[in-house]
Length: 210
Image 1 (cartoon, rainbow, N blue to C red):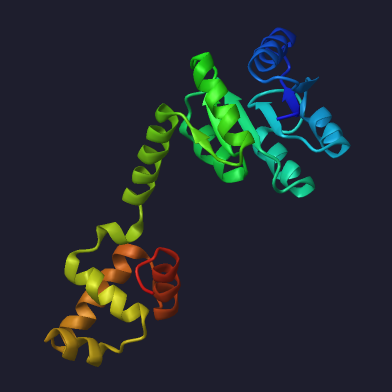
Image 2 (cartoon, rainbow, N blue to C red):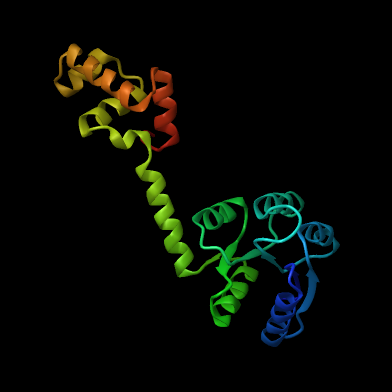
């Protein structure tokens, strides 16, 4: 690892990170900037082995900054440092293009492990952050509209999604056309999806059908 760009609006933090990296990695050259605009200005000047970004500093917000960074360089390794425990920061920052995220209260060894892993082409999430993401994904899953469907309703929902007609579904499941129609009415009421096309699109988007 030769070139690292540190972006943080606190000079003391930048200094500490710089000295930490110099002690840990022989020959590393560290450039420091204090805001997101400076990051974008420095990015094209050389091949960076790592960008170390504070989550909150002057200039573009972290999500916009990551988007702009990826427009300039889609592969540069990016490690984000955060002091926030908010789920949105963790999930959305990784989705926006960060290769890793670590909380500022974690140990120096954790930070160096993250730096090494990301500089070598990997990704990094501390166990705390991984747990937050897992919890967030579980919460998102629990709010999906098809979660309110009964097993039978979901079975019919899937068959509607792949283009089966009411009569065909009734034959498949041993139900009368009227019973299938009643189930379909309940499905529409629970999901708000009023057409077979809407049901098919939703099912495809959420992995309910192949």
